[in-house]
Image (cartoon, rainbow, N blue to C red; front, side, top):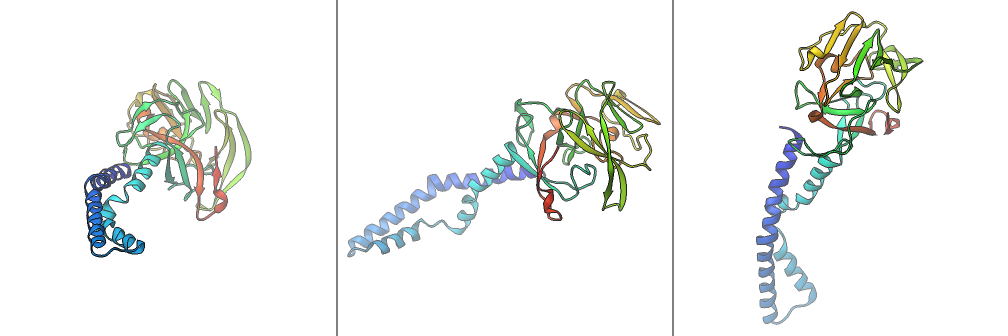
Length: 288
């Protein structure tokens, strides 16, 4: 069961008791308090402190109602925030190194590509489309219960080629600038590092000199006939309404090269901020 569904069920559960308390239990407690105050007043009067104490005693929610109803505003706020504004994710793998590191806690803009109904992920208000170069979170096509994060390298209608570890879009080689080698502390190894320009913002990518140029482990995905593979790489035509995703750690990423295209229905949102990494506080900030 996914977290959004759990939150939605909690909203319904706590909301039911919140409304029940507002319309039924609270008026009854108020009547009981007024009755107690009138009886006390008739018996000889009472001071303001005693009146306040009696009101508190009668208006207090029973423990079961306090836990079931009083959390409703908080849970509703979290549900709305997470469903329509931003959602937190944790980077579990190194497929987006050096842009995102293992352990990065990131925020994802949920409305960058349109307003979607939670749970069913139905887009009701289009606000934009993913662009080449965006770092995007999406439902893994082979298991929608899992969220993946990669970079958009191709949109509907694009011809994406990756030949001898060089990216081509619609017959145009994407500009790259060689940089100093990148040291990966997780694998204790150095990788070739480039600044690649894809879309409006340049970003960093890695290549492993020891890895082959051809794609290993290609699966039988939907629209598989849109792709051709050979010893030098591949060439794919992206179907309309779909996206071709690749990790920045090009030789250490399971992505569209292997399991296929991401449909618009599987889009979650645009990643834009590292808000925490407990192993490296300097990671906090925006990225491209």
